[in-house]
Image (cartoon, rainbow, N blue to C red; front, side):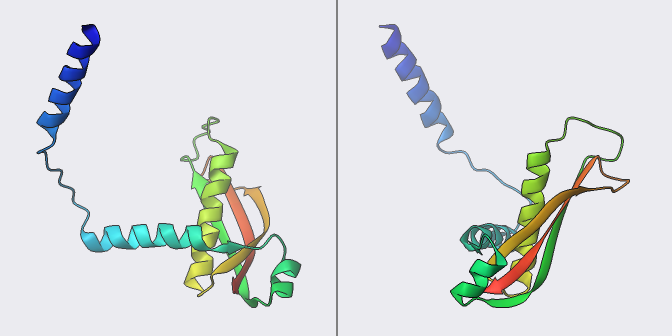
Length: 130
């Protein structure tokens, strides 16, 4: 009996919320650009070495880099290196896309010293057209 009452309560709550409308200050142009960039980054081909890219017939477009800066430089030690590295790689991918590339390599990622960041990671690589 308790399950029936709980199920009816949940369904009633969901039905009551079905007519709600949400508004945001993000316009459709900005939203579609952000979604497009996210999808394009996921579609980029990653080569694990420049040699692999060369052997596949990809055309080198040039050196790319991406940097992340986390924190405000006040010594916050609870910042994840892996998250910062992931953000730097996303920035590197965006650089590859700006150059017209659809493939990339990551040559290195390392911490850098930036006074206004608690943790800064710089990744370098190459952009390719594949």
